[in-house]
Image 1 (cartoon, rainbow, N blue to C red):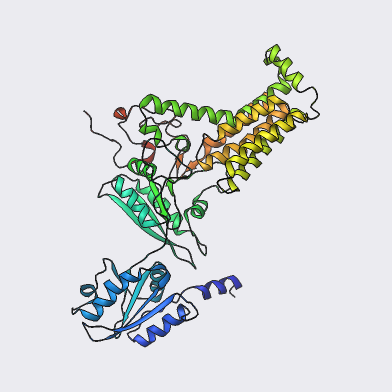
Image 2: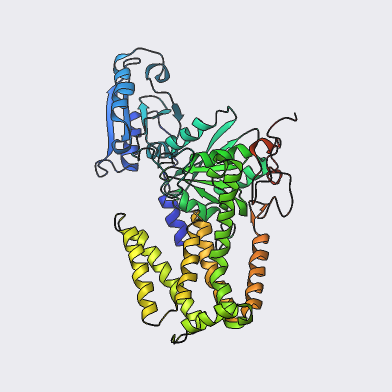
Length: 495
């Protein structure tokens, strides 16, 4: 006996019926499949073909196609031109032969026109999609001062063109895979055929084909389906809005994933260092780029550890603080009624509230309210003897440092881990903080992204361009990452 869910699933699937040679039968099937007349933007156009004098019918969604192209490149040629086949008459670049109604359903939802002809068991799908999307603009979340400024948009074709504009290589492959049960959406894999590791590529393909759900609308949702550890605090897939960043990874042998309706892409596999590397690091001169990386890694440490270290030292190891500074801290906390860890947690939570409110408030008001709110809240808390001034300084330094880490996923990881470290430090001081840090790095070292160790190529060690904490001069980068097992590990021949 089948389950209720199984019955519902089978009923919701599109018809697997093959296309008939009877035009009236095909028209009736299409009307039923797409709820003709009830579905306002589903259009049907009947016509008589000039080249074979047979009746034909066009079907499409008027809201997602280019009407001018349909009239000029499909309908007009079919009514006026003589020829021996559809391919020789219409002036559309991409014509696909379709044999069943499931494929018809997928093509119409993808913005194609379907042509049925009397006495023909084959239908013809012609691509005239015109999905609306933003023009190419600057990235909102990954700003760069030096280098290309363009960012991905919500259009798949536009995004692919942005990559091909930068990477002129006949080996650049754009592979499409359909996912979803009720709503078929296409996932595009972009990679260099003569570089990519086939095992990693096959692993990604199998994960995509194993996704069993009604719909995956965009990259942001797809990322959660592809992750090996959905409950891990650490991300294992890189998310970026920058075409130049995506292209640089493709050139190394990585795989980029694109979908319509997403103004970003995913990059797999990745390592811990990938989340701290920005395109600007390579556009700047050697010392300048490495200086910005040093600032970024210092920000990573301050965000993660400064509040917890302050709590541990002030509560359990006051002998480590110089006497004059210790007296100043003690004097500032003399009238504070709360334990130090409670002070720090209050301020950390308040900072997170202000950050979140600043993001959700309309753009013209967000920065102003964020800054004014932080100043007023901090000053009022100090004057009311709820928070000591040094705690405000420590938490402000911790919060501001987190803004230097622009990658959204690693930013959330560090902000959440910060609270865990503060709680550990408030329990047993530096001993607990050291233990928590050790467990965090042990856990991080155990993670793999599509089979690639997270701390590669530093641990375990692999041959690479040694672009981890700091990078080498561009002229001295001779190798691609060995941990990817690319088909060609050398970037340039030996001189």
